[in-house]
Image (cartoon, rainbow, N blue to C red):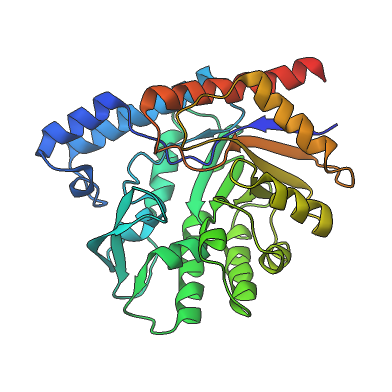
Amino acid sequence: MTERVATTPGVFPLPDWAKDDLADLKGHQKHDLVSGDEDEEVVAVYDQARKEVIERQQDATLDRVVEGQLRWDDMLAHPLAVHDNVETRGIVRYYDNNNFYRDPVVTDELTFDGDIANELEAASGFASADELQAVVPGPYSLADLATDEYYGDEDDFLAAVADFLAGEVEAFPEVETLFVLEPSLVENVPGDGEDERASDAIDAVTTAAPADTDVVVQTYWGALTEKVHAHLLDADFDALGYDFVSNHEENLYNINEYGTKGSIAAGVVDGQNTLVEDPGAIAERADWLEENTPAADFETIYLTTNTETFYLPYSTFQEKLAALGEATELTEVTA
């Protein structure tokens, strides 16, 4: 029987009180507060907010709990934006939406940083190792969001970003699951040859995780092209994520025509729309997915939002968590 696991790809909105507190501390936008070496008052706000969002996930009975990535005001660009050898410059549109991030310009070698590992260590005080889920940007997406002024070659830069992320992952405390977020595979489709190098880069990151950590590569904002999908399956990880909100037909086609991993992550809740899904409807979407992939015998289906949820008002975000948790409980009752 297929196990259904309720989770999210992380990168949450800040609680409203935390936004106000951070604004009061310096009177600046949050971009100005996140540098990697925040003062004690700023750290205290993030610590309390982290504790709150972990408790919200636990209250919603999610099976996996993320740290929340509340400091990631630059979204998936964050690990580079706080790196000592990276300069943050102009404000850049984040994919094709109304969110923006600071352009991380790599000016020297991408050495080990440990920023994400530190966040996970802080989260481990509120979540057990068997429920804790780590989140990292995928190397192709992180390289796509950044500007290179050091390596001088696209392939070398992608490999360097992959090595950097692999080093970060190796420093993680014990976690049950790792989500590697790769929207650029859909938004900026790699060309011939580049698709294979992207798969190799992802493999370098996913294989850096401990052998007993389940690794999910989550793609979103559409469907992978057939060639990119095929190359991605060559990388070593446990589950591939599909966005069934943005494009359920092509994602279903890829699974049935070309196969997939032994497990999948199904983006069945809209991470950007404020309409809150009914738990019963979410469970029905999971049933539909299994019914329409007759050749697949999934070990696990991770039921998740299709994208990050930092786009949502905090109250709506909490309602979406509750709906996901209840939907998974419904499937357990009816199984």
